[in-house]
Image (cartoon, rainbow, N blue to C red; front, side):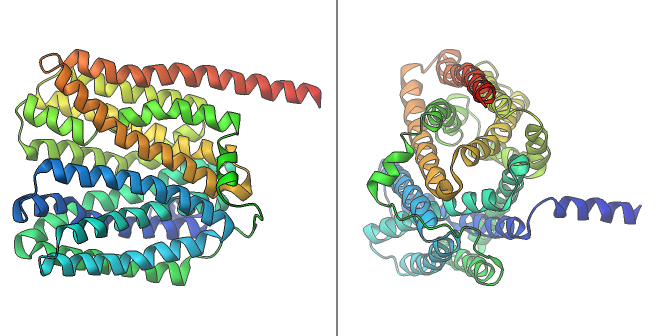
Length: 413
């Protein structure tokens, strides 16, 4: 039995390049370190520095714009300079930033400096993501890319799930500034792994660069249509924290801890089930994984309009999470498939821009609908989920056109 178990583990590990596993470990450590401290920054600014939640929210919204710019720049430079230099630069700068953030909090530094430091943290984190996503595609055969992105997401969410629990415990024994010391330590470990274990996966250099080259990405008709269809799903996914927290706590009357339980379940499910779901999605046509992801996203959020009991809310977040687990790795695999090998970083950065916009526009749309339908949850959530259902129909048509164009090309040859 032990031999069989070892054989299965070895077979699983052997399905992916060693570089992919290194990135999974780096993402796990980075996400855990990030979530130890950053979720508590809003509490620090509001409770200890007296900032209104409107101002805190404005800082968080600005960080989304900064993250979008970071995605674009990181994707472009990862194609021009290589994946490893971009990742190395981002992780190195993050170590310095987290040390600086800890010092600012320890000595009650000016609010503008703390806000600026936070924006730079978000910028560098976004800067690294296209390089990581492109490197996974570089190191993985097309037939296993959905699986590989599933493993990457599982590791990331495992870190995200562990971090807040560790940070919450540490916050009871240490000041907020000490949390950033632990985050800096985690970033330093990630930096050591990048230096020791990460090897360059992209050796093509493009002579063409700059704004014109970036704009050319959005002239790719198939990619542009895909991004346009994915964007409504990303807007729906953006309801997870801001809109849902207000709805569950302020409208349904549950505690913040109860809402935290929904997020904990979301993180646990992704950590436990993302890989098997991704492997199942890998066996399906890409468009089918996108359709199922969009439908489950929509169905889960639609349930929030009709249920009130906490077990039912747990069931609804479970459906949402299954939609997330189907859609997220499949969408990254589609981007990798559509991108020319020499431009994968640029395409990942462009798609990251759409992700950042979706996760910024989602809370805005949710806030407008919360105000517009204060006593009609079915109407509010129905409007939101209609975006996901419309996207699912669009993916069906998009997939049919792709099959038609592929068959026509085959007939011509």
